[in-house]
Amino acid sequence: MTVSWILNTIEPSLRSTVAYVENAHTPWEDIKEQFSVVNGPRIQQLKSDLTRCKQEGMAMMAYYGKLKVLWDELAHCEQIPKCTCGGCKCEIGSQLEKEGKKRGSANFLWA
Image (cartoon, rainbow, N blue to C red; front, side):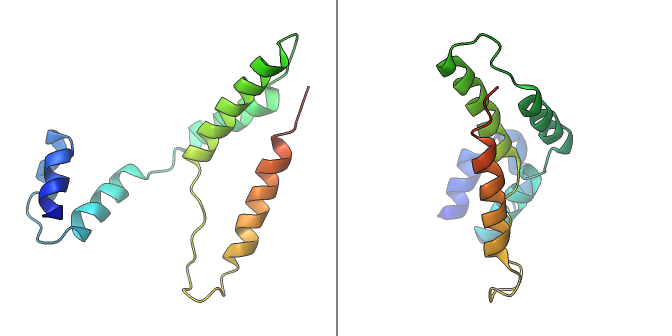
């Protein structure tokens, strides 16, 4: 039933890539792999835009909105680190904490 749902809801041009599967895990992983490619140049552009973003006479709410759009898109583009060891030996918690601190402090950069 899940395979049918996946096949009926994806773009028709993609159906041929997952048409002959017996379980839902296989097409799900294939689709995830195809569309979870990191866009390095876009991430770099967003980081550069954030660095250059200045208030320059904009109202505070407009400036905040501009920053928020950039931060949200960057968060969407960057991949979240995942546990690789299955037993918390890879220090995923400290990686996530470090990322959170970088993002949290940068959210308060006012020109």
